[in-house]
Length: 80
Image 1 (cartoon, rainbow, N blue to C red):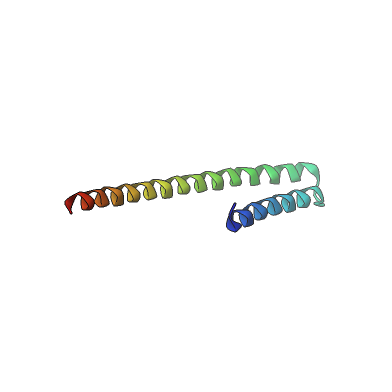
Image 2 (tube, rainbow, N blue to C red):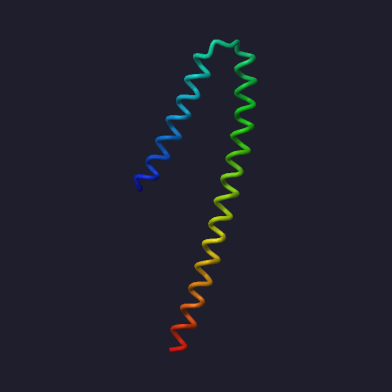
């Protein structure tokens, strides 16, 4: 695992634990806390879907570029 992956994994876990601790120790009544939590979860789902869509697009672009480069190198190899 690269240090960058470790950083993001640690950041995610730290943010999650921090959020949960904030929710648990918040001075608001349970109904308000659950409503806020529900809204936040909906927002997180939208953001997660956006990140997945972005990652898929980047992966597809990388695959297309790799295919084009491979095809070009193949023709260059046989042209010599």
